[in-house]
Image (cartoon, rainbow, N blue to C red; front, top):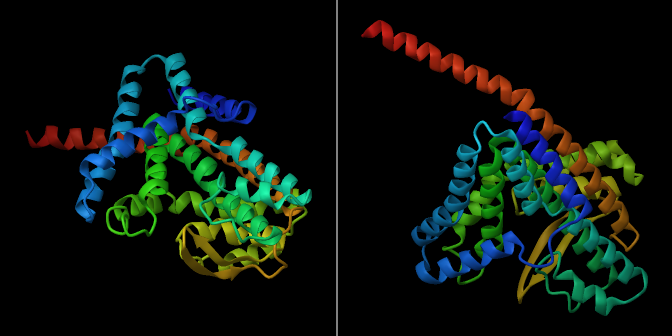
Length: 332
């Protein structure tokens, strides 16, 4: 059944690369509507309510994925089909690259109004006062971070935990986007969702940073410079994970990221990442190329995991279980 999971991950990745997100009836959007309805029912401005909300909203997709996994035991074609559908539903690599391309075209054409309108598809910053450089910076930072959130992390969790991992990760990441920010309403209620998302992204974000360094030459970047910037600046970001991705991208493109961001009237001033000039429109195609290559590299690792490390862990688990059964038999 590991082969079925691998085949499903590869097929789902291919569907995302070829088709992208469905324009209507997107499963993640449907989950968001259900999560919003649940929030309206149980919201209180405290962490206990937030923890219950997070447990219910993430636990339901995990339980659904587990039920499908049990139901398809011994049916590799069905298992592969469900994993492929789940992978396609939770990935967002093609959409991410398309948004970077649209933003780049608008900036190169000098159409700041269109670029400002489009920024909301990538992040939640207030674009009204941003010039070309700041719009390009916002896009580069968003693509760098979301390469981990929308591509690397789902593939890794799918490799490690199959369909429950795919659905559970996307649910947690979606909740973080909905309630995990520092607004008066969600300052305490959203904390459990934000912490869960941080935990689930610890490994994927660092892998994203390392892979960005490794593939820097595909965008005319220098691995040595990217490595140096990543090691020096990755922990300066207020997020424990976003800085891993953004610092590596800053080094790979030889640009300087970070600075003043405005979110619906709330201002954040972040440390600078990298040593080069501020990004421009021409950096966006290079950013998209790095993102695509990191995604392909992660797919290779995810496909190899169930047949290598996953098999070793399964074998070790069976050995421990058999040993415990022998011990119990001797004590009877």
